[in-house]
Image (cartoon, rainbow, N blue to C red; front, top):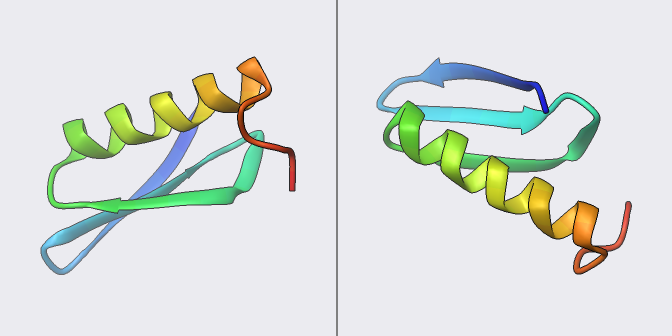
Amino acid sequence: MKIIYQKRGQWFTGHILEDPEYESQCETLEELRNNLTEIYSDIVSGLVPKA
């Protein structure tokens, strides 16, 4: 899994390269990575439908 992210002010925003329709916004890069990893796991598990 590869993520694309940027810092906007105090926030990090990002998405999964393979699934750009799923985004997250967090205060730390570590939190952003964790959120996107969880989203990716849910997509792979079939818990979240592909957009």
